[in-house]
Image (cartoon, rainbow, N blue to C red; front, top):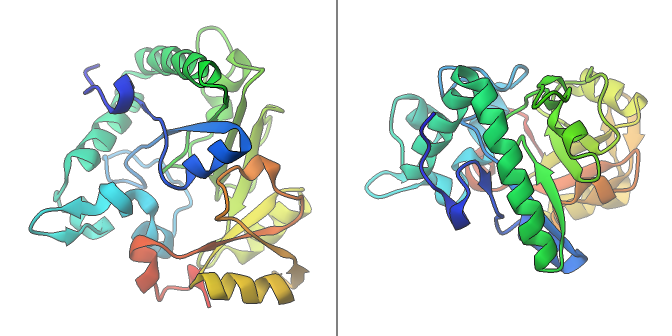
Length: 261
C-alpha cells in the first residue's frame, strides 16, 4: 500500500478544515478521513447516495474542487477523470482501503494514535470523523483484534453523518447524525424515531434562520431546527433536532431537492 504523505505528516487523516477548526474554540480538534465519494474510486462507499447528494457533495468544496483551467470541479468531471492532487489522493486512499484492508486499518490506527498525542499536547480533545466524504459502516470494520476502530480507542469520541438508517451495534463513542437528502424523508423520519438527529442542507443562512423559527416537516413530523454551521461537533447537538446547514460549493446550484428552500 503506497500513499503520499499529506498534511502535517498524515497520509490518511486531514487535521482540519475551516468548518472543523471552529471546534477549537470549544476545546476540540477534529481529524477527518476523506475518501473519494460514491463510486468515484471504482468502489462504492456511499450505498444510499442520491443524485442530489452526489452533485452537492463537499468532496468538491474548497481545495478539493480547485483545478487550474477547469474552474470548480464537479462530481461528473471527477468521474470522467478530471482530478486535482486532492482528488487523486482520495481515490488512492479509497482503493487502498478495499484492496489492502488490514494494512490500511493498521495505518489508520497509527495515525489516530499520532493525532491523539498531537491534539492533547496542544491542549485539545481529539475527535474523529472517518466518513468525511463517505458512508461506511465503521462499526463493522475490525482492526487489530478489535471489532472496530471505536472499540480500539474506546476513550475517544468519533462522529459521522450517514444516510443509512439501520446502523446496528454502534459503539457508545460513535455518534451518528442522519443526512436528509432528495427522496429519503421516510428514512429520516425513521432515524428520528430511533433517536438520531437529522441534518439538512438549506439554500442559505437566511433560510436556516427562517426554519429555526418555524421548524421543518420531516415525514409528517415538525422537527425543531438548530444551526449546524457554528461548529462541526455533531455529538454536542441537542437530541431530536434537525441540524440546519447552509449550501456550499456545488450545492448552491442544486435543483434536485437535496437543498431545502
